[in-house]
Amino acid sequence: MRLTSALLFVFAVAVQSPAMAQVSESVLYENVRIFDGHGPELSPPSNVLVVGDKIEAISADPIEATATTVIDGAGRVLMPGLIDAHWHNMLVGVTPEAGLNNDVGYSTLIAAYQAEKTLMRGFTTVRDLGGAAFSLKRAIDEDLIPGPRIYPSGAIISVTSGHGDFRALHELPRSVGDLSRMEQLGMAMIADSPDEVRMRTREQLMQGASQIKLTAGGGVASPFSPIDVSTFTLPELKAAVEAAENWGTYVGVHAYTSAAIQRSIEAGVKVIEHAHLMDEATAKLMAEKGIWLSTQPFLPGFEEGIPLSDESRRQLIEVISGTDRIYGWAKQYGIKTAFGTDILFSPEAAQMQGLMVTWLQRWFTPPEVLEMVTATNGELLLLSGLRNPYPGKLGVVEEGALADLLLVDGDPLENIGLIADPENFVVIMKGGKLFRNTLAP
Image (cartoon, rainbow, N blue to C red; front, side, top):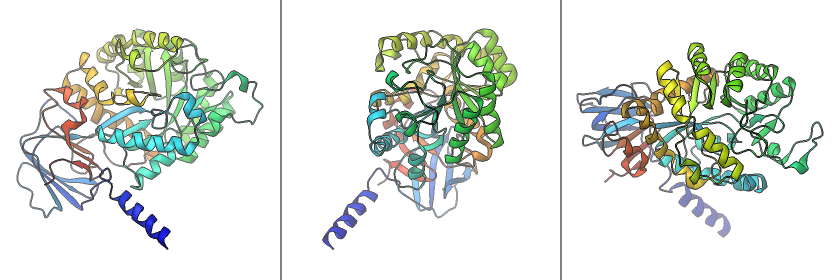
């Protein structure tokens, strides 16, 4: 009896943690200037009513409603929650060695801790591009823990020796049907034929993937994948695309080089992740075909904050050398461009998530930057079709949109640097629930 009482007390304290949401039936924001996800200007002083998980009304006139919670914005800026289109919930808080050797439960607890940090940086939605995030997503959606909305890909699908293959050499050769530790944990799956690709794709969809992630070329962090190589064959890529399209969703691929990108486009891939080493002809092809570019503003010096081997650091520096070119071509040819951070294996580097948004001002105006990390990224998420785990509009402040909102102490259209410091978000709301409200009496 005493043990039961003690456990109930601990549970009660846990569910009342300040990190958890304050739930109100309705919230009324008064006297706010709105960045709605589009355009270079703020609205005049306005009022916004949130009922349940959606925005019910927006008006320059007073809104007559009996709201459970009233927030006096005092002229502050109300904007959509930030969206990171390339995040790794399960991999950001661990090293590759720890990820492979930890108990999966412990790794998930680390991911839950990082998920709260992500939300409290103002990122209310992330598109997860690799890792077994399904249980984490479920716990967040069921309000058991705080965290962002997660659009999960499930395991990275790679080839033997490809980007995402973290097996050690002593694990080779593999017997058909045997799963490595990496595969058992759902971090990545190895597929070396169209049939294997089709099976692994369907497995991720069965678990709830909203899109599928393949690695079509070499990468920085994997130990046996030179950055210049192309990995999946055209029939293998087509197998993944067909399986995903049968479920009404799409395939995105990790690819840096023109060869890997062009093969992926021929196979029907909808989104190219990274692309830092592509040439101009490939950039034109992406624009002509309406292919999305989901990429990162990696700048010189970024490699200093990431724990890497000497060879991986060399490859990252090579990737960074292409950043200016790809953003220049994206603007010149009108490529649909999304923002993501792709931070891996470093909880310290994860804290740069908001700072990386500000790096985009090297190529874009502050209004363009904010539109990319809100409305444009929200448009990308809609590619999941009926596999969209959160039906509704994200990345905008509109009547009927999902109520993921930030109240900013300052004007980010004038000073994009405000996004880098989460303390500037005096209110953080996701799905109509308040996860931070420093204005509460």
